Length: 489
Image (cartoon, rainbow, N blue to C red; front, side):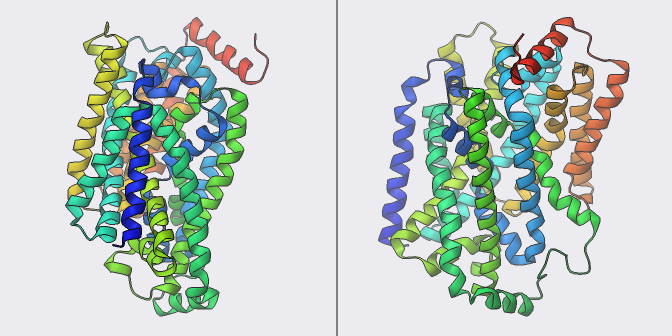
């Protein structure tokens, strides 16, 4: 811990809290608190979507995996990049139009309206899925925050988790979606700067390509995209299958829903794709360069390789800024997850089943209370982590991909899909994922693959017997397609 690091972190915290206070009184309706009034600009939408996507696992989990296993784990980055591009190309525009036409501000609400579910089961079950997996996901971010503060300030891991959680809770509680998006804009820029600058500074210190190769040889690490013992199709499928998760991530999809217009959304896509490429390439480079720079695992934990690299190659003041970039990655995702979880409780439980006549101020207040409750549960899980950051994220990421990914794609591209098929697919996909994971089969094939496939096949099968018949839903689908294609009826 240095004076420079302390000052940098304090300034950063004050900035975040200031943004939260600034937007506190601008959230007069639940749509403003949870969706920013659908008025986000191109840069805010792009960087907010990607910063909320790439959490602490990007700067800690992925570099740690590369440091331990070598370039072979870069298949994860390949899958994520392809998934990002496809998500923007296939989902963003249609989802933006469809959710506005149906008046939906949450993903469960959209599923109910899009598939014409008269029972409310689709909305309630999907809200439960969000709460379960986002609580797990948020705990991974708090684990990353704990490791960062523990290494930086020398405090105990438990105290570090509580400190990071408290800061995130306060500005999310106060500012809602607007505060989250505007902090994401700043955090996204800081993250990509760190991911590009630090590897450039460390490359020479690590001995360049020769130093990296020597480190790989000494530690018997794979020096190419083939795992030790030979490449297998299952390994490549498991790694690249991370890309499937994008179609079902509520905290990313809600950014598409909040865009000011389709024109701004198109500009956002170009910005986002460049950002993701630079960020993933930087994370892979950090892990590889770390092999040459550190011949033994830094601090006994490979997921801290970026933290120790910053301390090794940067001036204390610049190092403080780079450390703040790691915190940015952590916080930009947790705040989004808390907000989406809060929306699931307020919109899809409280207003749907408890207090249908609740006013806007009451719902916003309930949403803020839900942020605190969910944060506390995630914090308790993070105090005693049993897995690495990347492992925790993989489970939650796979859960959303298996439960919601096929639903989103069928909702946007299959006119005939009915609510019975959507509900059955979501339940089967989730169950298959959980059972696959609990049986230990995830070591052979990432659980998102069987879960995603089971979901999609179930929807296709049930659709043969219970297709969509509601004329209003069918007509609405045609109107959305026409509007997206610029042929508004």
